[in-house]
Structures are given as C-alpha cells and as structure tokens.
Image 1: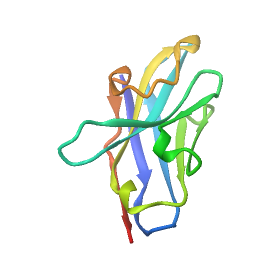
Image 2 (image 1 turned 60 degrees about the horizontal axis):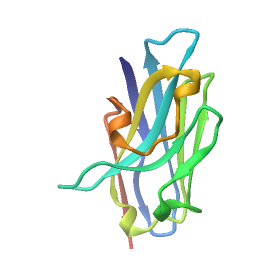
Image 3 (image 1 turned 180 degrees about the vertical axis):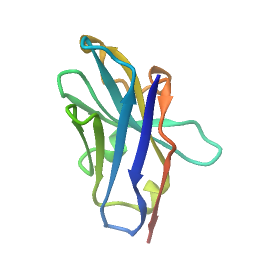
Image 4 (image 1 turned 135 degrees about the vertical axis):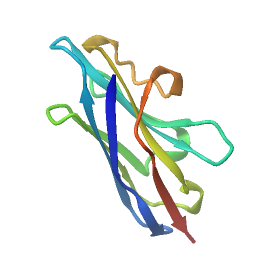
Length: 129
C-alpha cells in the first residue's frame, strides 16, 4: 500500500506555469522503489497518463505535453514533481499522481493507469484564456 499526498495546482492564465508535487509513503523494502507517474482526468472521461519516469530516470510524455511539461523525482524524499509550463486552456483537468511499490528494475515508465494501483487525492488545474 502506497499513500500519496498531492500539492500544488490551482488557477493560472494561458501561458502560465504551475508545479505539482506528490509525496509518497508506505510499505517498501530495501529492494523496492516507488514507481510513479502523472495523470489527468476530464469529467466523464477515463484517466490518461501524461508523464512517467522509469527506474533509470528516463521520462515518457504524452505527445500533447511534450516540450511543455517536465516530470522529476526525488527518490531520497519519495517525491514526484510535474512542472507545467506554457499552459493552455485545454490543460484544464483534475491531475493525479499514481504509484506502485515495485522491485527496482520493474519500473518501466508506463503511462497506463492500470499499472498504478495507488492514487493521490487529485488536484484541480484550471487554465483561463
């Protein structure tokens, strides 16, 4: 079981920036790590992966955020971040961090929501034109 607590988000004008944070805690041993990613969900739609990071620090982004969003992770602090720049009104959504506790070599950087059984509480991002 991984507990995730999100912070950040809010309202910003088009072209602005926001930073999301996600703090992970919970059960893992010395051979495992928190595999984490960011997702968005629009009302009435399924959760969609937008940014992930694998066990080697390689990042993976959905096409529509490439060049604008940046994911980073502080493993020592069990923190995940999403820097969102050049925000557009279409970026308005609820954003979630997802995580799983896996062996070190098992974090593939997947953007599939089904790979992450644990979720943060969500944070609203609203971008006005």
